[in-house]
Length: 485
Image (tube, rainbow, N blue to C red; front, side, top):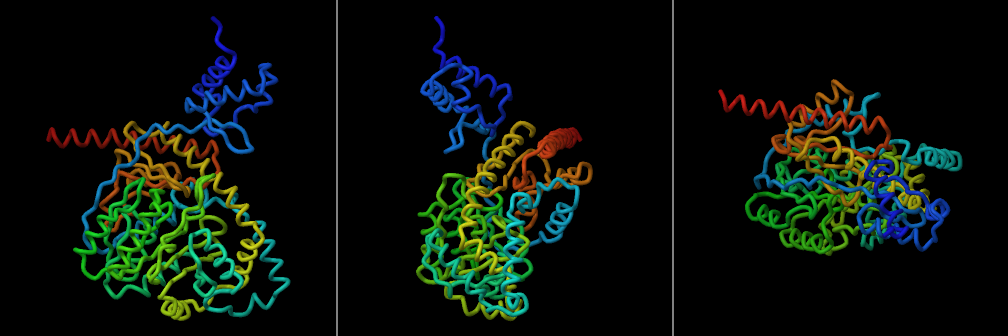
């Protein structure tokens, strides 16, 4: 008995997908084209796609068509809790080397979490900045308010509604990127030699800030899917003396890509407020939700005592080179404004005006819709490539947003990173610098996916997989030799 025609078409498309004729992320032929090619009705072709969707082969995208679905075949990383204790930070040297060498011309830049220039509206921003400079030349030469240009602060206050907050322009201080916002926040709330609670693994730049300020760090276990452990935060509060702050990336953490659920954010804010511990919330990735997902609210939305200092910037979404960030510091506004005035006094007015105009005229929201889709597509492509090329047993994160992957494999990634850079000019970030002492996560790496997919990127990941396999074999032989000896 002959199979129904829609089943025949479904099997034909499935066979092509499995043979990689259509790769993950590729757009399949349109409904209209399949109707014409196979002489089928629209309803029959749509039924075909529903079958493929139910079997996990395809996914629909609004007003775009059907695409080959990315199918992950690797497990997620395993959470391995560090000891709950305060310690010094020792990552600056390796972090500096990773940044400097990974940013060189001709290097495949999978190590630095900075968007590729071609994904950002540089030309549009340049035109706007130039036009503003011509129409308001005094803005190029005058100091602006140390708190920031009023036009930008008003736009931030309007956007705060998306973050779940009701803030006015006086509740913002504009900074040189999120780095200055975080540094000012730590200086404002932490006494000398205080301890700072952070996620583990956490972004090495945060560890370096803590190190530079002479503070200690307490690493809190973080689940790759659910985020930082509130139970271990409670334990740290009871056992660690002189806690000055808790510094958390609540939305799409770097490097795991996980977010705290709203109820857990509320619980975190209440727990810290009860113990009078400020929360420094880094929301730099908050706008980078998956396509179709709602932008997650911030922990700041639950702040009733002014103890949450919300920090962010446009560095991951719009223009890292313009160095525009901000902090909404709650009850610490006066302290931070004084520190800001003493340190850098004010940020350039013209760049603040350009960003304010970009926010005001709808350009930013249009750009976000585009960049979210691009980042998500790249995350899927990079993940699929790691699944194809890396050794069996490799684990990979499932980011809920942003554009970084955390990969766990059976090899020393510090050695892997050195070989990749020196022998093949490929930059990755070894996992050891995402922990204060550099002893944890030596079998992990972070991979930045904010670069357009290309044969060069595919080959780079293939090379990394081969090097990881070679390192794993060497490691196994070394263990055997040790046992024999």
